Image (cartoon, rainbow, N blue to C red; front, side, top):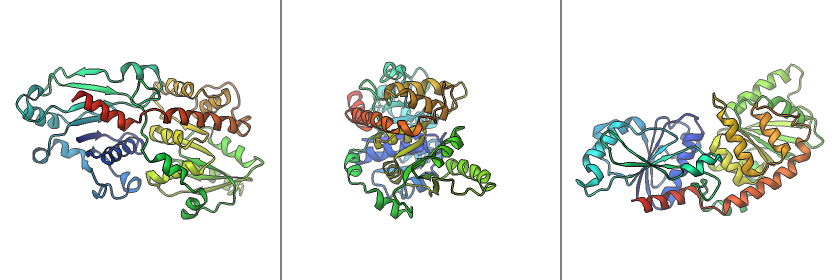
Length: 374
């Protein structure tokens, strides 16, 4: 089948990261994908070769071309349209194909596409209630067509999570020492912590706890805002000549490909992640983690995070740490039990990984949904 996937970048890494992983999985399953995106710059380092068309089955196209009549005239109509994360397909794009097909496709050998609104990931109850619901198009050139809501999620009544078919094989063959050496990271057995975050208010206290722990820790800081946040702290530490703070050493990483970000999470003993793509990857890593959830002005992310922690069956200390990391109200100092409770969090993370791996993945469920609704 031919898929058109539309993405407008809000979070530079998360939106395009998810759409790229989905595009790749569709292509690996034998489908052809056109990924329309308004800012593909992150793919240069996230997926080298993507923009040059080196990934078989996937074409990355400028969003602006989806409203360009000469371009649209050259394209084969797609079997599936996916609007990712609330973006809306350009009216010119819809009008072009609606006009060529007519209502319900009676004027064309092509059927109208299966039109899917791919929503954000949530463990909240509404995801189950709304998953798969139809949304009739009431006006415009595609009047009488139907969109469907498709919710990724953590239960059998949702659309599942992105997971590559070969993930277990890749993960079981992963060698931490080799990967660290390949990336120039000097490792002598310290505890490893990855950091991918916005600017969590607990960050300095977290690093201070690691610095004064009995066990040495090496912090692997991802490129971008996490690096900026830690560099800012280092400016304060430099005033006290504390580039290396006690038991804590810090390494700054270059931008990583998606595969190497997975490897980073597998290599570390604790992962600080942000956004939706990386929280799924942290789940697959099966290591203890903290999620810096994307903040919303109305604090809707509080309910979203609590529902996620309910899904994890997270212990009180793990919940408190998440609340503090995300500047939510919390009852106690979450750092008091941080290091002591890591082993318990690890057991809960691994249990969640095994439970979620038993579900069908997002790409497989999308393909099944489309086949059922064509």
